[in-house]
Length: 438
Ligand code: MEV
Image (cartoon, rainbow, N blue to C red):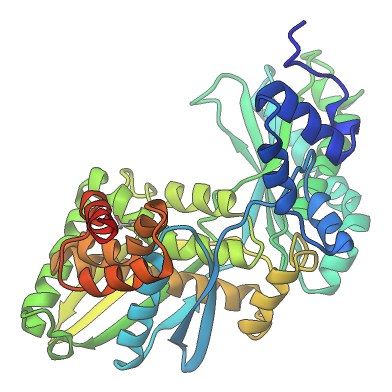
């Protein structure tokens, strides 16, 4: 067996894990161990909490935690916490926040908050027998999750509906039970999955000796039970609007800017190659907030991109119009977010984020996150149709390039002044630093 293989790794202490990895994979370099341990939090209890989020934790992986102030949302002003590594995202969000603050701010509204999960079944008998069984067992399925649902019900949530669906047109013998839920302020993944697994167990237990299956001598089989991250019924809309004349900028009249902006949106509605990048820009804002509030960005990403294709082809999640001299720009996003449960109580910085946002409930957080996506998208399209994206992006990236070139503080100061009116690229920055050192 290769020395790079190990069993019982998860049982080792953190130091033992690091020692083993450094020996087997990192050429026994002491710097590697130092680096990993340098990133441990000095407060042991705090570090332990982080260690226990996942298995095999070695260290912490820092990401910048920033804030974008001046977001006026439905009349209230907020500073949005953002966790992201891309240099220009927070600056772009802050720009858009200020721009729209001066034009009435953002409005946002939750359209719906329903989530769903499915029990996936295979049955080779007659569909009518399975359907009859489902109708008979349905009340027992609902009763069986009563103990699991008590506290969710007390908060006004729980199972909303349970429906049977045949999918045999697409896959032989395939049926499903669709369960819809309201999980209130929880993202609800654990609650939904526990309910589905309990109902699946009740469903399976009931098939033994069930009259509906006696004749065919075949019973349905549960393949799996799991929530869906496709949440088109958990939807929020964010919008900005102002007179076209208030949009004049970068040598363009308001009308010229608005028309170019709307054209850019039409392109993203039409052409998937553009739509993916366009939506990535929206997710720059969405993910940064989703991470800062301890939510599951993979779930959000999966659901959002699936929704972007719900009309039959992948397209822009945002839209824009000019009507009677008024420019309107909006998006609709499916967002399953939680403000209780998950990491919300465990990660100290998530608690700071929640406090910054005024301890929102889940619908409030949905509105805020959708606004962050819209703001980010506005800033990106604005740059794309005026100066181009690189000017602002490279300006924000300058410090990273200077750090890569190991510039000193005084070199950074000269470079910052110099690059105010010179083109920024990896090459020009390296050449400039070299010229200072000659
Ligand atoms: C970069 O992170 C995001 C953009 O590419 C988005 C867009 O093109 O709309 C600037």
